[in-house]
Image 1 (tube, each protein chain N blue to C red):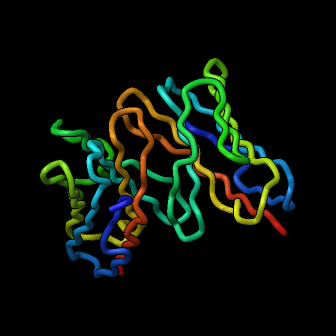
Image 2: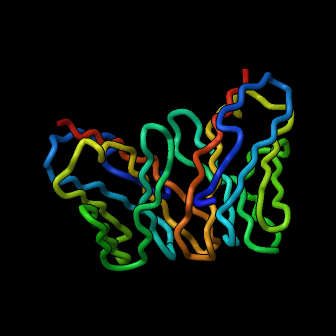
Length: 113
Length: 108
């Protein structure tokens, strides 16, 4: 596709349930980021994948959060046992290589009731 | 204190006015990004710069590495420029650290 896509666009879940958020980066982009934007807050880094290197997970807020990137392309962010404070917009971005422009997806708006 | 500070937090101006948004940072960086986030939530990268000045249409971004400061200027502002403008710095670890954004509203 022409840009970064994310699915679902909106997700409402109950506290305690697991959710999976998907990101399809731009084809050929080696780097992929996940960010979170809570209501009224700035963007927050979660995790970074670069090629076949081990991901930088230093931004994940707890061990309930995990992410994987299969085949160097599609990425899935999983939140286990969701809490209300996990409610936010989760954004994915990809870039062709280090020090290049990041292209953002439209985000997944997650609401935990 | 945040590593990246933006000012003002909110800015309302009349159509046609010259707009300046400022960003100061306190860490060593390899590059600085200016991002635009529209009310629908989509984020677009406007500029990435590590020195000097860049221009794209009515938008101009400058950076002073010694002073750890960057500015985003909009000339002949238009209501469609209304958005949140976010400054983000890239450190050597390839992670972006974001400012809290400046909400710009241009009144016709």
